[in-house]
Length: 270
Length: 270
DNA sequence: TTAATCGTTTGGCTATATCAAACGGATAGA
DNA sequence: TCTATCCGTTTGATATAGCCAAACGATTAA
Image (tube, rainbow over all chains, first blue to last red; front, top):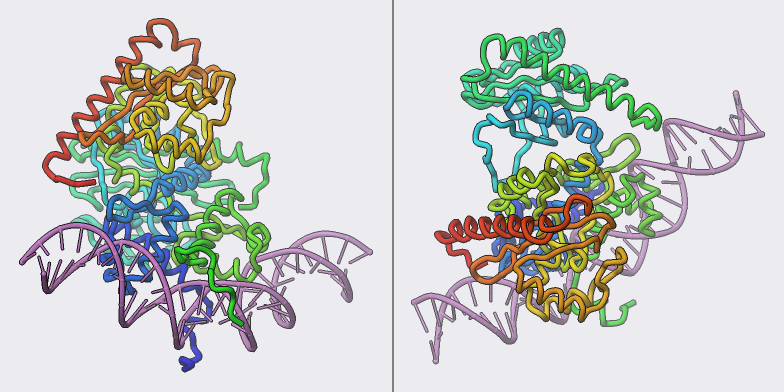
């Protein structure tokens, strides 16, 4: 019996690969799972789930811990690899560490993928709040519209890209200060461009302020941004308005220089 | 036309999943690749390679950078997740940082998977050599027979497991000091057990010494080990023989206590 | 002892991954 | 400017390989 001709979408995709990705994702959200649990979660047959897991195990992407199937440490290695390949990380790592030390607060290195912010590197300075804030949950990408680092990136993306991103992810309200209006956001991004840095005044998390500055390569592409975050009680007045922005911005400039000097020899078209 | 009945091996595996894993691995070793390059590398048709990449891209596991397909930052997130879920990391992280600070050298947290050592966490102390030793290549797992951390783990695994590991990976010679004889290694492991810690005297890399101590949970399972590594010129005499081992061992004991206290409530059978 | 629930294995049907070949765009050489 | 290669992409046809259901053996609970 032939099914109707319009097979799903025009670009032919491999169902088995899609399912593999779903299983990896499910093993994250479920924090490991047994065969039956996974099968009911994904609405596939028990035997299918079993065969997938068996194959992933053979490929060392999944390990069996008792009766639980879990993602293996292979993902840790792959993650390190991906991070180390990232140019912004390679040339920004040291500067982030310096920022954390000189400010005593959290210093971060962010980049953008699929319209969301991904933390490439995070260093907690000596005064940083909750030095041990650990999530055993998956670290979800952050929205760009409500963080200093995100606005620093958005400000230097082409207008049409920003529109697309906002269409896709919206501007969800995180706190009372979150910018939820598109025009207001674009006005803010103009300010960011004029200043060269972005503020986040409790727009993502109450009580948390941050300052972010973009890193731009010599082809005018934003690679990401540096930021420093700390409690509102400590980041205030001149410190928050002038001194910190200057520090962050100058760190971002150093990264830009390092990056452009290094890329000079190997003319990668990127 | 029916093929012969013994389809590959007894446990049925999904070829498409195997290929997906191969592609992920290939994108690592090739540092990103085009369609044709990947196809010839894996000896599959160009169109197949294309469909795999298109699907992996749709699933956000791969990104297209110009004409290059590369692993996405999704792997970084997954890696962080896997790391944070690891008990040894959660309860050992702080101790590794303390070790790095108090010794000034490199401090590491290792665990074992498939008979190889995987670095869970690495902190460079203030005196540590080549603070910026960065690999943009994939960090391969380490052999266990030629590292302090590896021998500390092997010493507390059941004899049969150790035999299996050695069968699988051998005892490849890395330097003049590498133990390449199985009996000699088992004698060394006896010593390690007696002492409670392991030495690495330039057995993996020339000029590099290290001391490692195991972390064992209250079910007698080795979860991994802590270690401190530094140049032979600095790690010598009493320091290398007594003081450093004591420091590392006591740090490992602290981790064990943290771990056992925390696991007390939720009776995970592991 | 029985019933329920798990992971695992297998047969058979159909969906689907596969390859070859062709297309269109870009680049380089003549 | 035209031609020849090299890409990445699309598509048709075919056989492979993934899918479910059902049954099995092992554990655990009732």
